Every structure is written in structure tokens, then in C-alpha cells.
Length: 489
Image 1: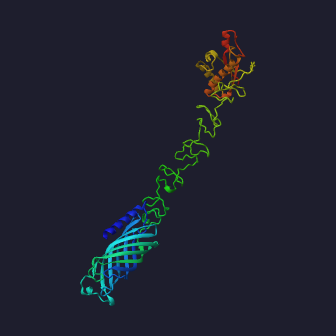
Image 2 (image 1 turned 180 degrees about the vertical axis):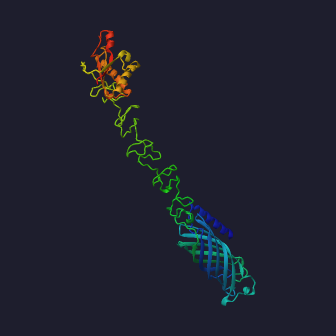
Image 3 (image 1 turned 120 degrees about the vertical axis):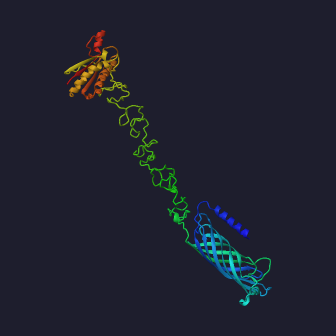
């Protein structure tokens, strides 16, 4: 019998553990339980006829703390009652034995849902008994003192507890009680010791126990977050798990892998102040206007890399390394619609028609009348000493003469100047006009590089129209290739 009971306890334990996938709050964990119940006894003795009698029981149990559906406890109990038997073949034909028991043992309790708790008890008790017959007369062997009226009973019980209130259960149980001798009916003999069954109902009240208000498997006494939502995973302190430690629990965190220390919103996602889909901790440009496309660093796209974002860039395909204005368009210093990086004549006067290279268009041979001016000072640079043949890059040989003029210009900041470029008649008329203007502009750029305001100059390219020498001779042509710097005010 003992082996069978042990096997039952073992199987129930395994079943309870198998049902537990996560920490489960057991309502009886850590509780002290007081039980009262009563019912009937039915004996298997030498008296074979069916007969019932009553019993009353009081018990005290303690269930050890657990995080599983299975719970173990210890029980102490005291019971009083009677065992009755009838049999016409015996004399006397009826007995009734008073029983007084004190015992204890172990209890296995299984939680099924939140309201039903089957349990199994196994233990032992000391019983005091007094077999009597009709008219409350002691039976013969009892009267003669043939046996001690005290012995050990082995007790087993299978029951069901049904939760009525938070700390109150209704109990239904049935048990077996095996005597260590054969004297409960006063008849000595037979093939087995006396035993009897009991069945009853009662109430149990649990107190001094741990509680888990939010059902997260952490007792309230250790729960720092006693109102965690049902089903949410919690840490050992009863608080919802926050894997990335951003202050937003995993069960509401839409961005569960946020780097540590990054500020997040209430959804647990890194803050994105300008709503460009690049979080602030990665965003180099945190004030991007809404709906502007950005790169991986949160900065507005600049497809042509000119320093002007696409959403502001009026010229989105500017070549690399070309200087642009604040609208992203190539700079056009002289306003001739040909940007500087393409303009071979960057100082064309305003209103002058230019070709695709930014140089003045000569539509027909023009004879330009020399504008009469009051000449205050005039310096003539020989093209042979100042420029390479057919070129308009100023040579260092001209610097000393030009530096003298720079001093005059700085001494009198109100002075104005005229720069005229001249050529011989070798080559086409159009090319000579263009070359003369470019040489005049080269001289202008030198003055500007020395800090002289560009507005103080008028620049003209007169080509071969005003020769000072005979273009039929080399000497005359050399005289005609010149740049004149004239102070006119």
C-alpha cells in the first residue's frame, strides 16, 4: 500500500511540473491553512454487514512557497468519531468503537486553473479507541484488557478543494485508514488488520500567505511593479522586462533593440525630432524641413554635391567643383548668362551680346569711334612684353609698371580709369576684337587682385580699329599690339 501511494504522489508531481511553462502563482503558496470537516466512517472488520458512523476533524496545514502549479505542505490534524459494525453471526451482533486520533503527514496540492485544487495526503496518526457493544457495554476483550487501546493508523486521503473566496475553499475528500493491529472491532483474528474508509466535506481557510495580485509569479512582498499586465514577462523584481533598458517595457516597445543611453519616445523608439526617419542620435542635420528627402545621416540630399540641398537647388546637375550661388546655380560674375566655369571672357560689359564661351559677339565689322576723354595720365603696355603671342595671360614683366599705377589708385581712391586693348590686323577681325578685350580684362583683374574696386574701371576691346603704327611692317604691327591704361578722372 505504501509503495502505491508513493507512486501516485510521484506521478502527480511530474504532471504538475510538466504543466508549468513559466512561473505560476499558486494561491496556497506560503500559506497556513486551517481546515474543519466531517463525514462518515465505513469499516472493513470482522463484522461484514454495511454500517456507517460519523467523524469530525480539524487540521492545520502549511504549504511551502512555490512558483509551480504543484505545491507541497505538511499537515497536523486531530479527529474524533466512531466506527460501527454489524454482523448477525457474531455475538454481540453489533459494535461501536469510539476513535480519537492525532496525526500528521505530507500533502501534495495541484492547481488546476484558478479555482480547483485536487490534493493527496499521506501520513500516520496515533489512535485511542474503545470498542463497545449495545447499551454502551465494553466488549469482552476490551473489558479483560487483552490489548492496549492505543495503536498506529496509516492514513491516506484523496480530495478536491474548490475556491469559494480568496482565502476560503470547499473540500470534498475520501480516505483510508489502515490499523497496525486487529483490535478495532474487539475481535482478534482474521486474515488482515482492521481498516476503515472515511468520506466527508468541509471548509478550509488560508491565512498568513503570500499574495500575487497581478499574477506574474512574483509575490507582492517582492514585487516592485504589483500591477503588471496579465501575461507580460517580468524580471525577478516583478517589473516588465525591458531588454534594451530604455525605460519602455518590451511588451509596449516597438523598437526593442535601441542602443543604450539613446532617448526614446513613449513607444520605445529613438526620438526623431524632424520626422525624417533618421533618429536624432544618428542625425547630423536635426532641423530638416518636413517631407525633405535625406541621406543616412539625416541631411537633405545634395545630388550634385555643390553644397546646396536638392530641395533648394535650382540647378541640380551642376558639375563637380563648380562654384555656385545660394540657389545652387554656377556663378556668372559678369551676368552674361554664361557661367564662370565656361566663360572665357569673364568681364564682358553688361548688355553685350556674347557667344557660348561668354565672349562678345561681333556680328559685322564695326568701326568704333574713339571716345574723347580728358586724359590725366596714360600708360601704354607693350603686348610683346606683357603677353605671349595670341594669348591674354599677363606676364610678370608687366607687374612693376602696373604696381606703380596701383599706388596711384590707392593714393586717390576717387580716381577713375579706362583700360583699352588694341591689336594689329593680323588674323580675323572677330578674333582680334576678342583678344583685345581679354587682354584689357587681364589687366583689370590684376588691379582687382591688389584691392582696387572693379567699379572704378571701364574696359574696352578695340581690336585693330585704332592703329598707331603701320600694319604693313613688323615694327608697326608691334606698336599696334598694346594695352592703354588711362586715368580719366
